[in-house]
Structure formats: C-alpha cells, structure tokens
Length: 500
Ligand code: UD1
Ligand code: CA
Image (cartoon, rainbow, N blue to C red; front, top):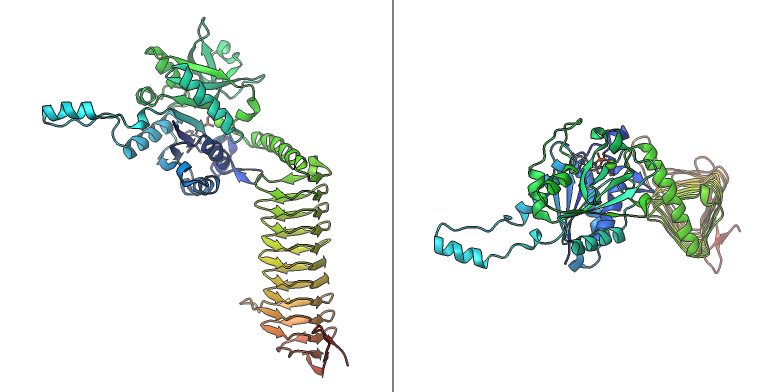
C-alpha cells in the first residue's frame, strides 16, 4: 500500500501581507513548501499532487527540486502531478481541483460502459477499480512546515484500522484562535468542523482544533467536495465542511489527537514564521552539538536546515551558516561571521567579521578577520586571506597569501604567491571585466595595481606601487608607473626568485 498525497499550496497568504506566495517564505533557509514535500515523501506516496496558484511556477520549481534531492531510489519516486487552482476559492475548492487532476490523469473513477450490452456486462465484471480510488488519500496544507513523516504515517495507519471515511489529526491548544474547532456529539464522535468565522461563542470555546492533516477514502471525499457550497462569511469553499458533509449522510469520521502540537502549527503571519524559526534554530543547534560540534552560544547561532558541519568544529557566537553550506572537521568559525552556500575543508580557521559567499575552500586555510569572499572563489589548501581582503570569482593556488587590504577579482593565482598589502586587480575598465593571471611563486610588492587583462609570469616580482599594464615575463622584477623591467631574477631550486 502506498498512499496518494495532496498538498494544498495555492493560497495567497493574505495575512502575511506579502507579494510572495506564503509557501515560498523561508524557514531556516528553505521555503515552507519544501519541508512539507519532504515530510510527504517520507511515507513513499504513489502519487504526489501539489495544488498551485499564486506564483505557480516558482512553487513548482521548489517542489520538483525537493523531490529530486529527497528521493534517491527510482522505485520510491512518486508520480508527481501539479494541479492549477485558477482562483483561490478556498481549501475545499483546491482539494477538488487536486482530485479532478488525479482522475484526469488516472482514468475515470467509474468503469467504462460499452454500447453493446453483452460486452458492457463483461467489461463491468472484468473492470478493476484503479488503485487510485482504493488507496488512502492524505491531504495536508503547504503552510505546516514542521510536520513529520512519522505523523503522516501514524495518520495513515490510524485511517486503515479505523474503518472511517475520513481520519483527521487534531490538537488541544491553550489558545485555539485561528483554527477550525472540532465539534463532537455526546458519544464523542466527530460531527463537523466549525471555522472560527462561523463559530458561536460556545464553539469558539472548544480547544480541540483541526490541524489540517487528513486521510480520506477518496470516493466519498470526491462526492462530498462536489457538494460543498461557499456559504460562509468568507464566501469560500471550506474543505473542513466535508466533515459535516460526510457525517450527515452516515459516514464515520475519526479524529486522532496529536500530542506534538508545535509540529502542526500552521504559518499564517510573519510572527508565526518567526516563532517557528526560533524553535527550529534551537533544534538544529542541538542536533549539531550531538554530532560533536561545539556551539558556544546556540541562542545567537543561526544554522540553516541544509547546512552540514564536521565534528570537532567550533562555532563562536553570532555566526550565520546559510543555504547549502558544508563545513569540514575541526574548523574554527569566529564570531560575527556569515557563510552562505559555501564548502569549507577541514581545519579551516575563519576569523571575526568575515563574509563568505558561494565559495569553495580547501583544508588548512585561514581567512579574516574582516575578509570578504564575494562569490565563485576557490581557495586551495593552506591559502591565507587576511584583513580587509576582498576576493571575487578567483582561483587561488596552494599556500598563496593575501594578508592585508587587497582586491582580487577575476584572477587566477598560482601556488606560493605572496600578494602584498594594498594590491589590486584593476579588472574593470568601465565596460567589461578582464582576467588577471598570477603564476606560481610571484611576489607582488605593496600597492601593486594589476591593470587587466594582464599576466605576471612565474617567479616574477613587482616593486611597491608598481602599476602593471603589460604582461610581466617570468623571473623578472618590474617597478614604477607604468611598471618597467628593472632586472632579471635568479631562480632558486624551488622555482622562486630572489633579487640578485
Ligand atoms: C485551515 C483550516 C482550519 C485549520 C487550519 C490549520 C480550512 C477552511 N480551514 O485554516 O480548519 O484549523 O487550516 O492550520 O481549511 N489554499 C489553497 N487554495 C485556497 C486556499 C488555501 O491552496 O483557495 C492552501 C494555502 O496555500 C495553505 C492551505 O491551503 O497552504 C491552508 O490555507 P489557510 O488559508 O492557511 O487556511 P487556515 O485559515 O489556516
Ligand atoms: Ca494556515
């Protein structure tokens, strides 16, 4: 048995007061919808249907990416379907759109009947209901990012053993505001769900609420959805009215209560988002500490959900590790550092107030304080980048150093190069960016200006304040403005030069 799962993600999210679809807002660096998709994939659905509306294309891309990265095995990959809800007419309408998309994809819900009577009878007898209409259908909202696969599996199991047409998860809240309330009869059976806008004072006092996580027999659901009417304050089709719709015609609806209510909180407003993020951040820090990472102050450390950190690494206060960052083992990340979508090797030391974006860094590298790797930077092992050095779109070879006040952009730097204080690649001529190549064992004097495109040959040196506008031959010292050849340099056994 593999259930089918429907995620509703078409709403505008009016209460967020945002131009961005609510499900695209991020929690610890990942869009809300990505969390819900990952949890849904945890129950290995046969089909996953996502209802799109607001910013459909962006939401679709996030969902596709999440499915691609979460499901390794081809056999466990769900059939992924998208259904477009043209107008946000309510959760009931969104669910109907999903079921229509499913039935359009998977053939009619009822057997085909031939015009020939004899054949029709035979067809009917042979017809096997497509599994879609026999498998349980899980339905959940795209704005409940903390939901766990275990909880969805628990719901499906309860549904299968419960012999009800629908099973829904409820929670008991101190403050039930904003949620649909569960109305039960004298025997404790669920009768219907009342949305807050429709509830009278007595119903409002009910603290058992609808989490927004359901499991249905698809056929009665389909029928009940078709009978929904938007007769309420908001003029929307409420999915929750399906419960009353089913019980009123004799179906049983079962409610199971979750003890982990924080997991099922929905995000409707920005304070909701901040509250969930604070909680998630604490959990992420706790997880990495269990894995052997020292986090000196979890309260001020921000680690995004997809970050990976090696054991014995020490993270100081006020560090932000974002996106798909991976940090190796035994690194030390000092305070007020921000690292975004970057990979660091082992034993890397990043000193205070450093920003590293979209970069790849080898082992035993030292960076900062106050350094900025602005993107597409590759540092080989044992590189040292010091105070107030900015590097952009550059490759720097093993053992090279730029310790003070330098800018390296569009540069390829060889091994064992020393970049003197104040050195700058003048890579932009006002119209285009040009490359600079600095070969192995070069020593650039303080305040060298490298006017790109330019190449500094292996073992060459520049004098302080040199403005290099032409390529420098190997093992040559150039000085002045513009820089001219002063002398040839002796090459020692290791290939580096020294003045004669
Ligand atoms: C809903 C439930 C409420 C429950 C609460 C749990 C209804 C009517 N109410 O209320 O009983 O306690 O969730 O968090 O279902 N969506 C669409 N299309 C639409 C409208 C919404 O796809 O036309 C999607 C949204 O993108 C969102 C989800 O459905 O992900 C829930 O919608 P939302 O407006 O947040 O419902 P709530 O008011 O929170
Ligand atoms: Ca909601």
